[in-house]
Image 1 (cartoon, one colour):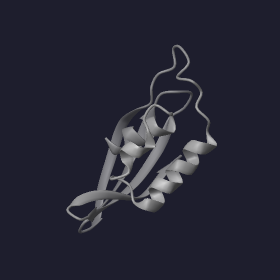
Image 2 (cartoon, helix red, strand yellow):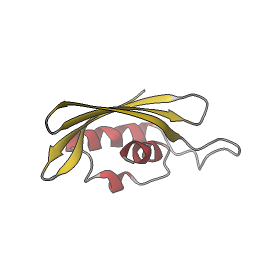
Image 3 (cartoon, one colour):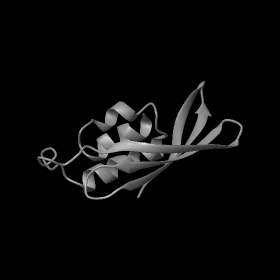
Length: 100
């Protein structure tokens, strides 16, 4: 769900503020810079599929740490997404995010 939400933020389909509690402050700020660098296009072009997460692979390298990679399909090419989640205050928080 987090990866799908990030893709929607990058596509200007969801406000970034909805992710504030899921992202570490530096990840949230970095996402904001990426959104600002890619101006909104006024919605998807007709016939262009919405990006969706097609597969997710998860590992637990340490107690309280989860690293996951996902493939997002839709648009002109597939994209890879990597996230690192750490247990924080009784919930998971994304401390690293890469969208390639």
